[in-house]
Image (cartoon, rainbow, N blue to C red; front, top):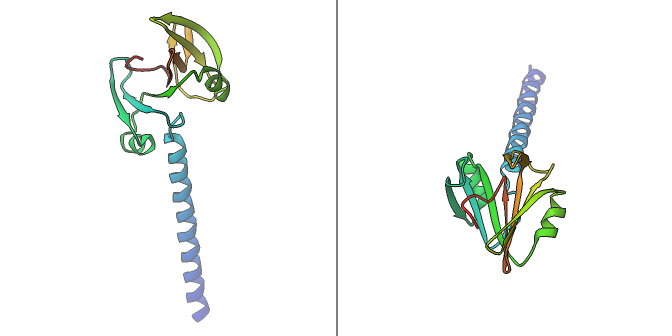
Length: 147
């Protein structure tokens, strides 16, 4: 009788351990899918909605905000200086087309490392990098709200 009770306790402990590991794996997967796309910069923004006029919110804690709100349509960040080449390389991106407006060069790229995207100019874009004389802004799938 005593061995049977110990066996039941052992099996219950194993079940609790397996469930705890499964929950930990699920939480880790959630963190990975909601982690910020870009490294911290001077300003990190999250966009909620599918148009450039959608609500864009500046945040100091993008991971926390993405976990709480979930429905993020885009992310962008700003850095001092020209970071185009560095970001293009980091995301293994292919340049699709460029445009220049008011002294800002806009690079529209595709990165196999980023999910989602949108069609612009007949091309599927999921990384937008804008460079001015003082700063760089990067967004996925594009920079919502302007630069």
